[in-house]
Image (cartoon, rainbow, N blue to C red; front, side, top):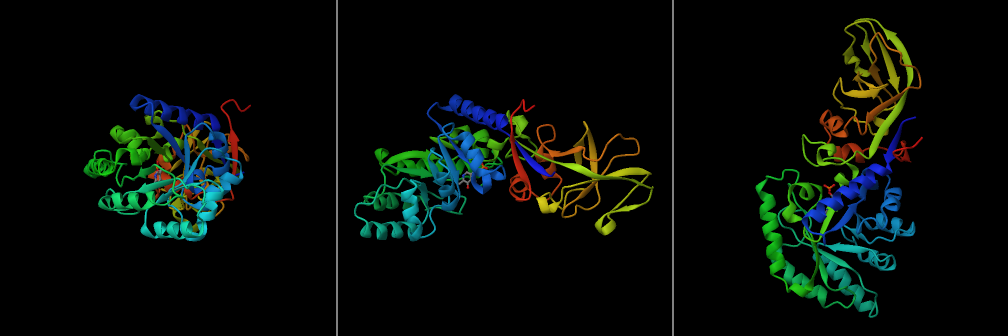
Length: 373
Ligand SMILES: *Cc1c(COP(=O)(O)O)cnc(C)c1O
C-alpha cells in the first residue's frame, strides 16, 4: 500500500550531525527542532516522542499544535513561532507552559489586559521577534527597546526576554541581505541592556549550514532535521545528513502495450516501442505532485524506471520495458535514501518543503529502524 516510512535512526543521525555542527561553532548553542506542519509530513507526535529530551526545544507554528504535544506528554520546551492569535489563547499558553513569540503590539495589549484581570498569573516565556529584513512578522529594530521596556513591566512575563529573527534568503548563503540581517540583529542586541536579553536565535536550516556566524544561542532546524537540503542543487547527503522519509507503494497491474499506444488521462504519453507498463497505487490524492515531469524515475527491484503519462488521483503508470521480471505487488520507491526527494522536487513545480507537506492523510506512516528485519 501507499505509505510513508520514517527511519528513526536516520532522524537521530541528523540530530547528532546538527549537534556536532553547533559544537564546532559554540558548545553553548542549543538545538530547536522545528516540527510544525505535522513535522514536515513525518508525523508530529511521533517525531516529538522520538526527540523528547534529545533536543533543547521544539518549535511549531500554532498553539493547537503545541497543546496537542503537551497533552501527549512531551516534556521538552515548545515554542510557537507565530505567537498567540487572540487573548483567548493566553490561558492555554499558561496551562500547558508553552513559550510564545511576540511579534505585534496587539499581543502586548492582550497580555496587559490579561494581567489586569489576573494579578497572580503564572509566568509566560516570551521570544520577541524582530524584523531584520524579511518583512513578514516582527517589530522594527528601533521599536524593540520600547517593546522590552513594556513587556518587562508585566509581572506575568518571564525575565529575561528572548530575542528571535528570521532570514529571508538563507537558502542562498551568498545573498547580501543575510549579512545585513545579521548586522541589524547585532545592533538590536546592542540597543538593549545585556542582562535583559535571554537567548538569541536567528538561523534556520539555511543559516545553520551556510552562515555559521549567525548561530547565536539557539539554532532552529526544520527541513535539515529530516535530511533534506535547504539549498538548490544540493541534497541532504551532501550536508552529511540522512533522508528520513521513504515514500513507497506497490504495483497493482502490469500489461503489454504496443508501440504507438497512448497512456492515461489526456493521452500525454505515447509508447515508442512495444513495452510493458505497470500501474502503481500512488497518485495526487496521496500528495504526489500531479505536475511531475514525464520520465521522472522511481526505484523498482534495484533499477530506475520512468513515470509515463499523467498522474491520476490514486494511480500512476511506469514503463517497465519489454524485458522484465517485475510482478504484481512489487515495491516501488518514489524517494528515500537512495533516491533523493530533492530530485522529485526539481522535477515538479514544488520545493522539497512543499513536496513533504503536501502528502495527505491517506498515507499511513510506519516508523522503522536501520535493521528492521
Ligand atoms: C519554519 C521555520 C523555521 C524552520 O525553517 P527550515 O528552513 O525548515 O529550517 C525556523 N524558523 C521559523 C521562524 C520558521 O517559520
